[in-house]
Length: 405
Image (cartoon, rainbow, N blue to C red; front, side, top):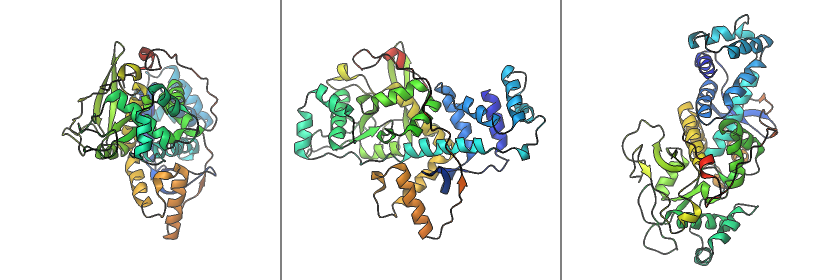
């Protein structure tokens, strides 16, 4: 059914579907910033299939609610998906239906949910950027036992400087004091002669406590990944230290990490986004697309693992590619740039508050907002949970959790 869905979405490029916009707190969809609906869904389906997600099934379920005859035609396609060539997918779907009379609102809602709860969440991770902290606080962290740092990192509550400093030092202990991308040497304590690292997150810590985002993660990458995010969001498996320029490029989704698994051993591969770029970079990166990234060179790698969680690496890379290929990344990058005109530091704002300020700025500047009432489709987190097994020095079953993209 994936080939049929992709064929229909390719054709939908000419149907003048409305653009996917941000869903606000009142469940309405408005604002200047938007994404191409067919392109966004097209690439979401491709990458979700690679991660064993269920965006494809969700897409067909939403299409089936748009017209009774469509649901019947979808059932016929599902019963024998190979009998119809992709070139005839649209004709088979709309057999006996006037497409111009179909209300595709459920499909538009779906696209807007992913734009709001995945795209904006991953490109606007709220919270302060990692800094070196005060000498006293850093020296206290450095002298702490690893088990104590793990406990602090997993504590419930706000992602504050103490938790951030604990995760940064855990990354030091696992990976060593060399940036795995630029090769530059880090200072573990302030005042050294090298560079200060910035803590990078594969899954933004801001997704904590956001059921809409967690629901979309479950649909995109599978329920097991959703469970891992809930359990390891503030753990060493979600972080690593980077040099500042490399970190900025990572935040802007210009590169990602592909985790390949062979007999339980993980190989981390540097991937440019888009992957067609062959020269080293961006910024201070010395790696080219396809080069191996070396983690696990620290003194406590045996306890903390050989690198970040493979599931998290591959999901972050998949989302980066979706947003780049659909054009959503460029839209949100412009949104972030426009935020610099506000009087608020947007890195300290939640995704919804961040966008509310932007909308207010647009109104003050005479911008026009279109209001379309759209209820959310990813609200209830009632899907069955599949808790993973946990064992070994990484805190999880290596073979069961590793996955190549």
